Amino acid sequence: MSKISLIGAGNIGGELASLIASKSLGDVVLVDVVDGLAKGKALDLGQSGAVRNFIYSISGGSSLSKIKNSDVIVVTAGISRKPGMSRDDLISTNLEIMKNIGQAIKIYSPNSFIVCVTNPLDAMAWVLKKISGIKKNMIVGMAGILDSARFKFFLSKALNVSQEDIQTMVLGGHGDTMVPLLNYTKISGIPILEYLKQNNVKRKIVDDIIERTRNGGGEVVSLLKTGSAFYAPAISACEIVESFLRNKKKLVPCSTYLTGEYGVKNLFVGVPVVIGNKGIEKVVKVEFSTEEKNQFKKSVKSVDILTNLCQKLLIKSNF
Ligand code: A3D
Image (tube, rainbow, N blue to C red; front, side, top):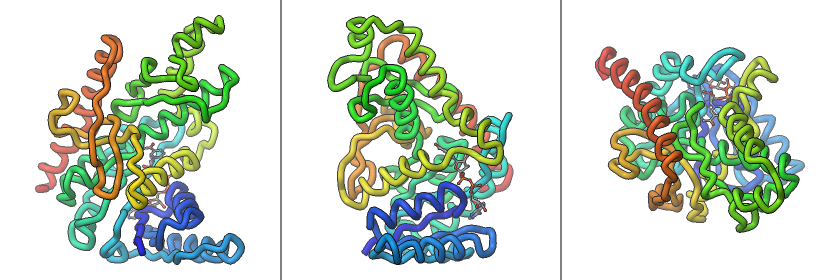
């Protein structure tokens, strides 16, 4: 029976626990520093199981030792954005939290598959890997699935076609520089640019959607005012967990530690990967147009700046 630990029992952690239980992926353990929060949510969710018929257990607590011998650990602990904040504004607080959690993973569960969700995503995944010593194929950051879902959602509304029939990929860093790939965006196999031409849809509509996708998280933050998006992030993280535990070998964009692929070294950047029961089983190569190549480079640069900052902060605190 699989054990899935969720560190952070806030908005995403709670929703993710519910999704994992509904999909019968395994026993869920919620952990949160706020006393009673994880235990309370676990109790509430467990009781919902009497109606939904969960077959696995959900428990909670505040000690990180509860993650011992997990198969999967999803990290959502940290602060989230408030209106007017960028993901990068979270860095110093969330870096300290990742240091704590990275050490706990190293002690209690060094062989688990780790999914990082905490922002700024690519830099926090890098810190978690560095502190925990987890192998590169056993840690990913969740972002590309969410960014691609947002792109699909907006396209589906604008073009009046089913979301189910849209295939796309958003790569690069999880931030304003993310790179939606138009050449790999299709509607039931029809390349999007051909679809636009045949159906007299202006290219500007798609360009505006790309911009809206880049600001997709911020748009939700400005409406919620007290926190950030959690339903779509939770189901996106669940997709990764499920592909690992059920060995589904889904080919999805994830923030991945690169060692030369796409010309990038020692950084987490969103690229297409296959997720199976060995973790990241393959980094898949795609061809970029010249414009996409430049956008990807720019995106990598912004991840590099944040990761460097984390590296300096870690050295300063003797890590
Ligand atoms: P929130 O509802 O505030 O939950 C975070 C939880 O983490 C809170 O309950 C905290 O008490 C808890 N926490 C803080 N420090 C610790 C610790 N050391 N150990 C255990 N628990 C701790 O936030 P949320 O669930 O909405 O978001 C969580 C994170 O995900 C934030 O950093 C968001 O910015 C980020 N996020 C990422 C995406 C991506 O696509 C990558 C999308 C949405 C949110």
